[in-house]
Image (cartoon, rainbow, N blue to C red; front, side, top):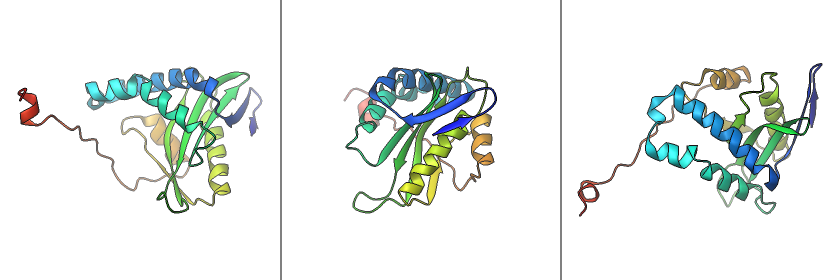
Length: 178
């Protein structure tokens, strides 16, 4: 799929294993921005797990496997350079046909000021959903990330619930070394 504008062309294609280092780089940059916007995310667990890149690299690497048919990872390119990605999970129960999907992650190079990357990724995502007969998409956007909030609202998204993050603290027995 290609979207053309007078200034540039954005191509969206399926992710390849060779793309992972660039995806991790873009994702870590976005995660760092999110951590700066919301100090509540500054827990050691959140940063070491999500900000460290191991999570996203391993998860997307598994998702790029052609035998995994319930996930799709698409990348946006300008020229030969990757400028964003969207990781889509086709939801539903394991023993049923999925009826909904979830955007697990979407990240765009913050140095790419031309715009259109998120729209190109979302357009391809919608094509995938239609191919699978899926009629609903769920997206989570950080509460204090105004750009992401505005993007999803402009695309027709509406808030239907709040997501709560609850860290699991060690029990009293574990914290005193017993």
